[in-house]
Amino acid sequence: MKILIVEDDLDILELVCTMVAGIIDVDVLTASSGYEAIEIIEKNSDLSLIMSDFKMNNGGAVEVYKFLLEKKIKVPFGIVSTYGPKDDDIFKNFYTDHPQNFHLMKPFSFNDFEERIERIFPKPKNLVHSDFVRIGADFVKRHALPLQIYIRLSEEKFVMIQDKGHYDGVMLDNYIQRGIEDFFLKREVFEAYILETLQQTQAKMAQAPGGDILFEAIEEVQLVLSRLGVNQETIIYAESVIEEGLKSFRNYSKLCDLLDRILTMNHYVQKHAYLTAYFCVAIAKQNTTLTARDHRRLVMAALFKDICLVETPLLAEIFYIKDKKMQSLSQTQQHKVMIHGQDACYILESIPEFDNITREMVLTHHERPKGNGFPRGKENKNYQALTPYFMIGCQFSHDLIAGERSMKEMIHLAQNYAFEYEFAPFKEAYDHFVLTFNALS
Image (cartoon, rainbow, N blue to C red; front, side, top):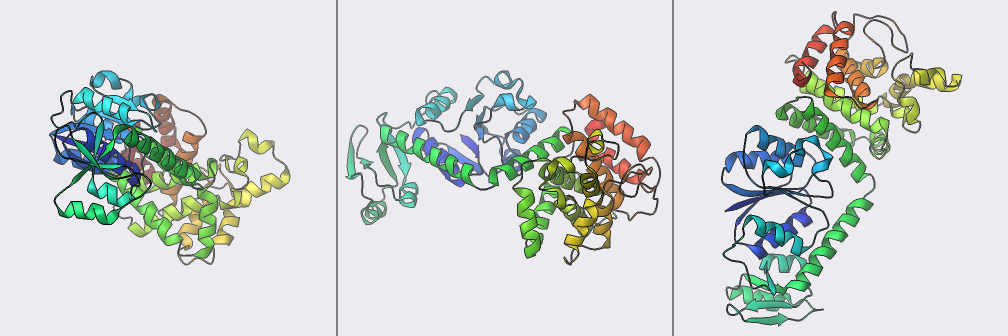
């Protein structure tokens, strides 16, 4: 039997693997992301159970479960997360799709975990004595467990070889050299250790500055892309381009500070930056004449276009010149909105990667094909090849963020774009937009 565990936190992944080993003898496969899990599933048709965290970088439980439904793969699926089936429509029939599907809320107890496993494997052949839990030698050594540790002499007899409060690595190595591979903890001790470790891990994650915020933003964007019909290959490619761009931009001290300001803000500027970057790369990928360098230009423009409005996100939310919010601003605020692209260019001017093509995108991302945008508000049919892609990516990102929209409303939105982007040089970008988001066609 094989079990697949999908978890991006290595400490939690190790704990879950250890708990499985303490309950039943199975082959345990692991993945650190949803898309990695999908690759494993494709190569292993004999999986008996899949357990997955909900939100992970590069795809999570949503993407894995969607793949299982599309391929009609019937296998028990467990969501191991603070999030659950109610948090995405893909799980609307979760408990009837397979009678053994389950949701286990973090932090969970070993007893709860064991109960879920035994529902699927009701008569595990190698379940250890009920008073003890088996743990591997590697786990004991890696964590230098200062707990009471036992070895098993017979079916019913366990002998303590280490008392609590002290870790004796030399003694344990001696046992390992004599062929002892499994050690045991009393059930109540293991239960307390698991619960405490999970709580500490989650507390540490919650205290990481900006970490959860950025993580949420990436996961939300990938979920939107998937719902709009963007294929997984394109999503993975867009993510790789963005990651490479972030790594490259951090080579410049000025950009490091700017990125930190953007990525730690849980508001419109961050969300629009990420959504625009993903959208633009995904759309531009349809144009085979555009290069990887062009895709990186799109990412740079997307991330830094609103850098001068980070501290005033309400101003960044004004996308259209006729927005009612614009009319309610003071003259000073209106002026700041009108020139924020130009101000961003001044800041980026000394960066070697910031070239004329990227500059044009930053300066004109509020312009519209028919001249009803800002700051110039003029029709222009002589834009660089990338600019129309950036315009439609920025506009679609804003229109999605600005309000909750049903799929029917998004289809109507895309149809309206057809009239706005109906002539050169914008039509090609629109055609590629439609090809990318095939759920809107």
